[in-house]
Image (tube, rainbow, N blue to C red; front, side, top):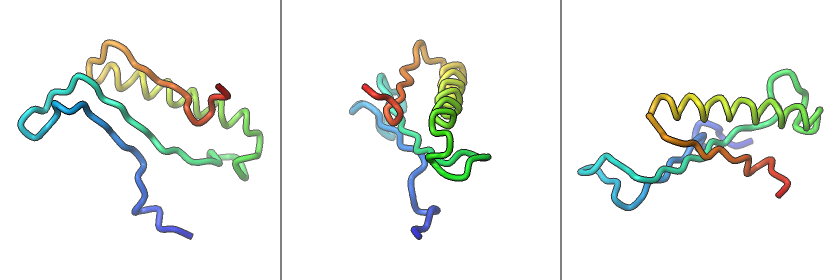
Amino acid sequence: MGDNATKHTAVQLFDTSFSAANLKSTYVQSFYFLGLPLAGYSNPADDFEEQRKEGDEYMVEINDDLKERFGFEAGAYTRSLFSST
């Protein structure tokens, strides 16, 4: 089993103008790596649709909190892992 302490839980990407000398960015993209099963489920396949729904609701809530905290005009939360399209 791998050492989870060395794995990324989030990644942020900024536009090319962002640097140590310029801490302002026009574009930011973040990836959050969440795992299954969620608390209360025995494995990822255990009521997968309910786990997906709970995970989506959590990410929408976090997206709203980040928009408020950092003054974003719009969020762009997408469900890339769970989307069927």
